[in-house]
Image 1 (tube, helix red, strand yellow):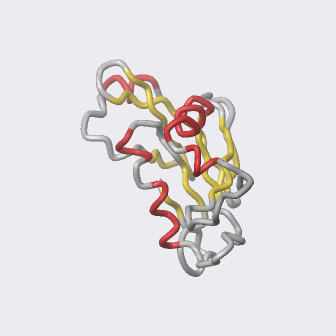
Image 2 (cartoon, one colour):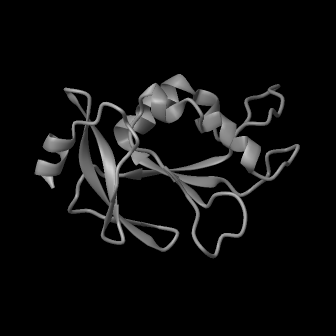
Length: 141
């Protein structure tokens, strides 16, 4: 989920990642298109909140997105600048992002995978996943 607060004039202010499947992560590199251009990638990174499991998976699949410094001899290439922030998969441990309190909630994704939905300002924000199992997810709340 990409979020923008009222005091953020253009672009996005943060990303909250629900899970590490392709339907949620394959567009992460495209975030560079809405970030300010810098030939040296010297821009403020966009905060991205995600579980440790999702972070580990992304680090394997997209190491160039999590690499902090250029290796010797490596040229600068324009990639999304992201500030990775690990959150816990625990509804008893809300977190604050850009002044907003979010509570992670378990949401079934298919038959056997639990992704994250979020409670924000007492409204449930669920990822738009076509195979979310509504009854089981609602019962867990």
